[in-house]
Length: 164
Image 1 (cartoon, rainbow, N blue to C red):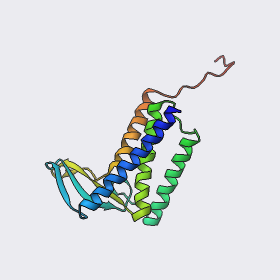
Image 2: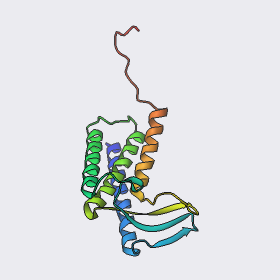
Image 3: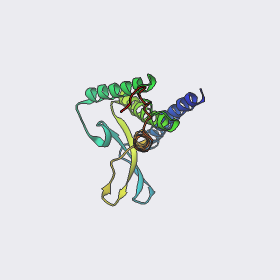
Image 4: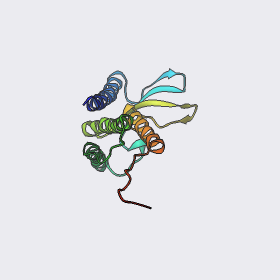
């Protein structure tokens, strides 16, 4: 029971942090404003992204919304039904981070038809695509999940009566 409460709280905190930071940026900055946090390496740069991750596009806003809803619903279904169960708290927390990030960006797509991005980092003209906390949650969750499955593969029970 404690694990389920932890995972639910992790989900809520993820979505709230993502939405609160986007709301703060939207209220405090004008679109395309840029403010340095750590020289040119890290800055806040307010943009709106109508594409997918890293600005990639795979159709108009309606298609983007439909794909985002479908992926989020499938991921939620697989996780809640137990079909996607890494078997550990860390593994499950990584899945919850991915879901929280997906939901955070889905809220933006439903509300505005695009996603607020504002974290800009790089060196000089070499910049990473601008992103937000939802993107961080999805990326970190996927990295943890990948490491989890590579180094802690799910145990398969030995088949009874198998002499091979």
